[in-house]
Image (cartoon, rainbow over all chains, first blue to last red; front, top):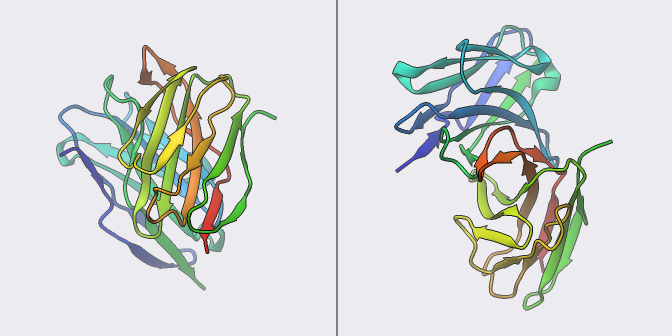
Length: 114
Length: 116
């Protein structure tokens, strides 16, 4: 079955340390890929997206993600985490030229320690 | 400012009552969606609509109903048939071409429904 997997339910990172959140998908062809962030009780905000082209994608708030076709992965990274980055992060995909809605992973909660 | 407005933000319901959540967008998007969010479950698709007067069931449509009488509006009714309706509900919209997603989804701020 087609799916999106975020292996880490909860991650804690020290402020100023680097961050990597993992996302894997299972689709036959390269889908459109997205990362969203959600603060408690709020809607989702788009961090970045990948449709085609350069596999390293830059987003807002200093985030970037790298698409690796061989690993079916789209991991989110940030070189230096700030306390305000504490939130829940969702990876989402839509099958290329075949999707009518986004399919979301179950999310990773990021805590930032001082 | 363009965006998606959901109301109410908080809603309490007694068992056996139907409730309707409002979703309005002024982004001129053709497609609109309703997702349900439960802790640890991510977002699950309830219904989506690609055009006025047409909508399709998502993965968890049982106990829900929708309408799409205007491009801007996509209300969701949580009926008494929904066995576990307490959740956070998110409405979204997007551009589409020939019925397929061509860009990201834009989300509202959500509505939290609690059944007493």
